[in-house]
Image (cartoon, rainbow, N blue to C red; front, top):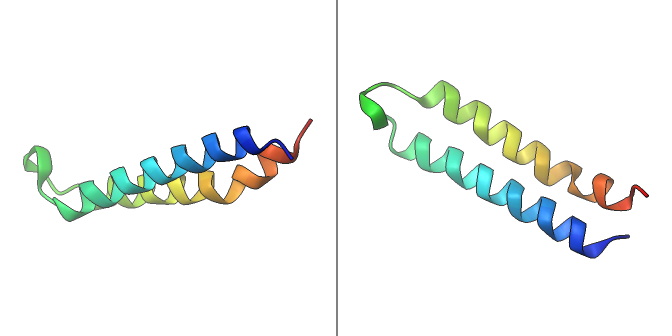
Length: 59
């Protein structure tokens, strides 16, 4: 298992998920309701976190 690649994917996933949480917390950022896009960003972040192990084991 390539630990460095795992950590990179995991951290990127955490950052994306936290970005989605930030956008959802400030629901009316940019003067419009962004809960839909925040949900999509959170799902993408969780998907990156979940697939980080799979990507780190590929050769």
